[in-house]
Amino acid sequence: MAIVTLTTDFGYKDYYAAAVKGTLYSLFPEIKIEDISHGISKYNILEAAFVLKNAYRHFPKGSIHIIGVMTHTRVAIKEREKNLEAVDHVALEYDGHYFIGADNGIFSYLLDFAPDKVFTLSVQKDTAKESFPTKDVFAKAAAHIARGGTLEVLGSSRDSLNQGDIVQARSEGENIRGEVIYVDAFGNAITNITESYFNQMSSGRDFTISTKLRGYNIRRLSDNYHSTKEGERLALFNSSGYLEIAMNLGHSSNLMGLKVNDVVRVEFSLQ
Image (cartoon, rainbow, N blue to C red; front, side):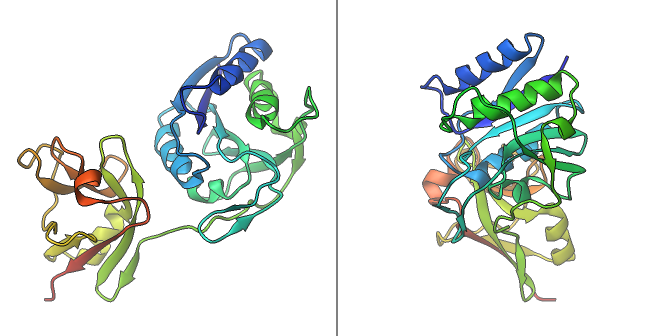
């Protein structure tokens, strides 16, 4: 049975997600639909990429992932100081999975290496209107793949995708400068500092993790969220391998004021 996942910024109040699901079932009643999230912040492709990247790999190979965030072919949205215009709708094969969405820069955040195949979609729509591409284009493409159809039928092959402004942790002398890239529903602030990069830079040295809020420095890593006293801040590498600033049974983002794009530094002791 083919699995189709949905990652959108539709929210849970309106009919949009239900309309996409209804279209998928109408096109292929045997399909199985799973929600990854409809709570992505509006137009936030970085957030959508982070959520999907850490979810899709737990689904079986051959799963189809629809991304319903910033989907219009004509956009002029300032995304991290970059104007994106006239994006295409694409379907691609990557890591044994299929992804369908707008080529608005999101795939540079989502993919770690080049996809096996990329096709610009030319799916025939039932209406001339372009207000709901997730339903009118992406759902049709997903149903086609779910029925065993090939990407080649969906459009024309292409060699490249639009690049977003990828934010990576970097060194500042002997130290690390990272940023908060996601804040989850528990208020945990997830950074772009990976465990492998931290270990590469640390060489076993003592360290201090600092944020914009003075007096909240962290000098050790925890194994889990409950390894400190209730309400006490902590840092750990989460299951996805990213450094996370959290609080035991608390909301670290609210208390520490952390939000996406805030700087997080790791300063290592001199030896």
